[in-house]
Image (cartoon, rainbow, N blue to C red):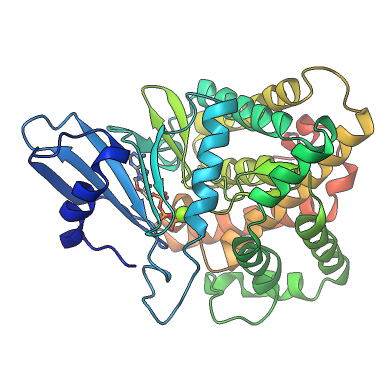
Length: 377
Ligand SMILES: Nc1ncnc2c1ncn2[C@@H]1O[C@H](COP(=O)(O)OP(=O)(O)OP(=O)(O)O)[C@@H](O)[C@H]1O
Ligand SMILES: [Mg+2]
């Protein structure tokens, strides 16, 4: 069923006992606040007492911005609600509280992160908070450690595998991150001046082989519960605290995927701040901090083999490179770079970022640690 704004008062009345926030006769104000592509997000608040509020996220049975001709399973919100459960269990305080999940109508009722803003907006403004980078390292490390295959008995491991067998959304990522950007696909676009670089990339057989290897890792390695789309638009910052949202791509996969995507979005921001040295050095330091915190949190009991960690680290670098590239030549670009009005400046930022992403993919197995990556900047 599709739920539009006019149907919400009745929906809230029926669901009142489960959601719990409002008394049945309370007068409510409802507004659409979402800026995403796939789903609808509403804020519901008490008319006389607006600080009593919740956020409802609803998945229509199609891609919201494209319309009913583009169906997409509403189960995406089941995975998101399961991920929110995991976050609140293992990394409490780093995600909105989950009040209610209605699988039939595909609605999540959650804590309203009022006055929060997306991390990406902070980075664009050159506001780089090391505490956020550290919290995100801890968040990823904690979620991955608690759901990590080697630390679970086989029944628990099977339970996580099944609960996060999000194959529909994983296939979308496989297409948009690992496949489409390197084929002739209608959703790809890039700044015209970048054409020679794109051509070179698509003809580079060594590179294409690495893309294929990383795609196989993405599709087959099952290590822990990963967020699956952890870019800087999936993090809200509220009172200096990071809150992770939008986990509809969560799946049981390679842990390096989250670390890679998150770092790649900092790197893209780094290149966008071409002439702002303060912002650039803060971004570099933030990436280092995220990795250090992640490694400490993830291997907290020291049982993980050095070799396993090294492999995770290499995969994360490869994924970071691919995330950078698809944000430059694929379907979904980042505001950090798209917002650069001066076209020649934008082109030089994109060239540098593309070259860097390419190097990360091709050489991901040869970096000793994160400082070796940052030393190339
Ligand atoms: N719990 C919340 N509190 C406050 N605002 C929120 C909350 N959840 C989502 N939002 C707002 O709604 C926006 C869209 O949310 P979200 O990214 O989850 O939706 P989406 O449709 O899945 O997006 P996408 O198309 O990027 O996947 C967020 O960027 C944020 O501004
Ligand atoms: Mg989403």
